[in-house]
Image (cartoon, rainbow, N blue to C red; front, side, top):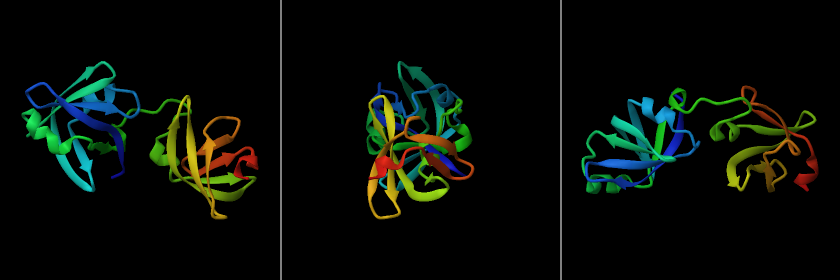
Length: 166
């Protein structure tokens, strides 16, 4: 089963065991349909049944079975919220999951030049961190001026202008 990290458990909320979650996509509606989540922290994963979910501003409040007090939530603070990919926020046109981008090879004129290893948030756009096959790492703005066609199914991202590699 392919999974995605959809949020970060930030802190407890109230006295009944609710936890405040920051959505990594900015979307919140998909949290309301979750039956269960996996909390991942420092390599350890724990599955929880979702008893209740509600939107609170830009965040989500989750009540997880077995977490019934603020103290019970403490070991899980800063955990990643992991779900099956099909339970994540649906993509709109020209949107991609960061994890899918990180599996791609950067190509220029049908030649592979590097591999995307991470996606970095940077102001109004994202940056692709690319390990070039010639041994250097570069950051490439994920904007039309630099990036062309993205083919997740083929695992490729087109580089329009190779000047940024120098």
